[in-house]
Image (tube, rainbow, N blue to C red):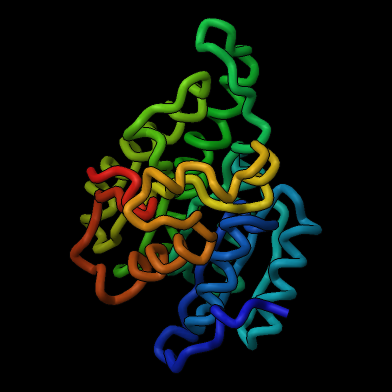
Length: 260
């Protein structure tokens, strides 16, 4: 059963709003899906791993929210366009929130920059940077006035992370992409913002290192590890009515490990 943090709140005004979340087969993507379901959104979950996306959709339905799962490759023009159309059909003609969460992360090899495999560089850039561009591009015709785009960056772009140049560069590119899209989509009353999480405990993070739950805790103002639920609140704010004049920004959510 879903965690109790996702109890449905009395937000009837949001029940006709649709959110599309990429990379939603697990980890942060699944947490986002459950968080939006708890606020009454209609939730479309997409992932290259359809089985995982379907499991997320099942958990969303257990909360009483509408859900649909789709297989999608965010590096493909055809796949993102098909996904956007399917999601809009699910959302009665529109997509209110696009949450670009899909990324290559746990499988990225930590390597000195001189030795990075160009093929891995291309993969990371295609998924982490090209993906949000293609997905937003495909969803744009279905975004109404007041629509929201939320891109996932990473707090590591502010501190750097040795031997991880391709990942850090891709997430820095997401911030640049966010700023330009904010200006272009702002003419239509659509906001575009980024979230930059710190190291967060997901299945992928546990696979990166031993003792992951203690990584960086001593450097934070809040002395505990970040959980996926800690990042969900930022996304809900950026999607909600209180952020209608907030755009082109990058919200760092890392428990005070660094101040920007």
